[in-house]
Amino acid sequence: MDKKIYLTKEGLEELKKEYEELRTVKRPEVLDRVTEARNQGDLSENAEYVAAREELSFMDGRIDEIEDLLKQVTLIEQTKGSTGGVALGSRVTLKINGKEEVFMVVGEWEADPAAKKISHESPLGKALLGKMKGDKVEVEAPAGKVMYTVVAVQ
Image (cartoon, rainbow, N blue to C red):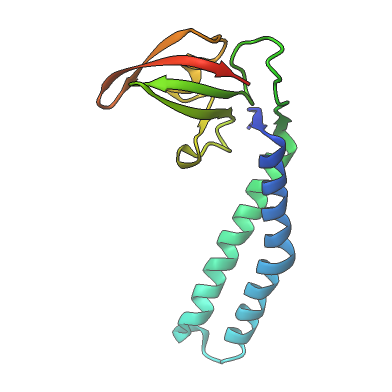
């Protein structure tokens, strides 16, 4: 995997926080559960042991995944409107059907549509890149084409 992982400073901090919590808090707790369950005797009939081992396996996989991500992170610099166009890290105010909404363009690992963080790889994110205040973009959505007007780029 040699794809760049784009994260904002906040996104990188969140990922580092999750990594540390998994390594220093959650993994030791699950290891204790595995040990306790193992000490209960017959492992072939021990559902707690099986569940704890599966959770440990999942957790180790997530730790490995985060380690790989951290090696490939490219930090998104918050653009201060220097170019004027939409870029990774931009906050974009869009007008949709007469209503204004603010979105932040982020890397795909940090995307969270519910929090108005859209991936630069999403249809809307791709359409917005490079656009300036006043530009209109049309995006194909499940319900049909949607027209957006760029009101502001920060």
